[in-house]
Length: 202
Picture (cartoon, helix red, strand yellow):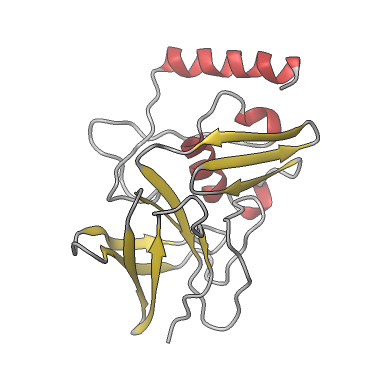
């Protein structure tokens, strides 16, 4: 880490502590869901690599995925893995640990066109269904517990982003206008996919 980045990290961390800002967090909600009453939502603008200093993986991922494509940073890339968020810029590669109990999974439902993806890249990945409302359910394959059951609007990049419990396999059903896409996601292993682009509406 450069001396400049270390200084920024310290400054941003101090500001966040002073403001007592909390991130909305729940195993059964997505970044587009209302935050729990006990917590206030955090809005962070990330325009460049220095803006991520002092922020945790969840805050960065939520902010990048919800940022309009035209406003996304161009001086670094980010890759979401089950165990870490990997940030790469001119100074090198930095890994930020993911939450102990949750994994971020991004799903891009499609009708006609998709792309190959395995680890989600919130700065670069673009799906077909931008700013579109879907009915989404995510159900534990073993227990039947529902982690998500709500209407979710895709981000400008065409993805639905969800924080799911770590260590589960779940069935996903996505519906729009009488058309349905289904699939299975896993958060069991550190090499499980975090970018799902194979769910076609039919």
